Image (cartoon, rainbow, N blue to C red):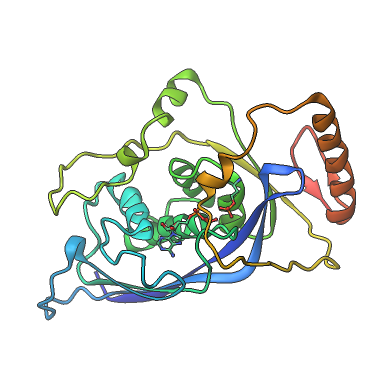
Length: 271
Ligand SMILES: Nc1ncnc2c1ncn2[C@@H]1O[C@H](COP(=O)(O)OP(=O)(O)O)[C@@H](O)[C@H]1O
Ligand SMILES: N[C@@H](CCOP(=O)(O)O)C(=O)O
């Protein structure tokens, strides 16, 4: 393999927008960047686990692991690689992460990292046949709320939902995350092939965004993990609240989506 270098940029996102809970996401113009070099000549004497050296600057630099078996980005890349019978990164892979996105504060940093991870797996693995839709399947095996990841992958203002799966596929995707992402194993590779995603887990629709509306993010000085934030939500909602929800969706749609004709049959949205 010839040496190569490239940059992957993945935008952060805001989700749970208004009434679009777990459905609508918006990509924002702040990007996680992976500066990747793959330099296979045998000249290097350095040996990194799984052939991958990670360096990191920016938000989270004191807490994010540089071990490729632990780091979320490289674990996701390894998931994609191992589904294609590549057990490790190509020799002498260097991933330099530049991250301006605050962690655990509502800008979808984990979804952005997962999207960057599948892109990394695709590029270093030479897996050029993987379409954006197929990459979405891999992402949805890891992150089951499609809104943030849909926006980070496809860009812009995006509606997403998970498609109903057959009972067999439902059984296949209901698997612990640890069986999808290679767990830290102290350098021992079990050789297991991880479960591949069924085809077409999710669907997305791109909406035209009304250009007059600008996004302003207010970032708190404390972190709240998304999983913990969700625990305060009630399991059921009174009917009045549900009616208000649909009402607000109607106005949200009218005000936010610029001149969009939504075709309920095709799922297409045309400006
Ligand atoms: N650039 C990154 N590299 C590695 N892991 C990351 C990165 N960004 C986020 N993560 C992981 O995602 C976690 C934050 O996820 P989460 O609680 O869902 O918050 P957010 O709303 O920012 O997505 C971090 O604690 C870290 O484990
Ligand atoms: N619907 C998503 C929204 C989470 O947003 P985040 O920015 O806090 O990651 C989910 O619950 O995962």
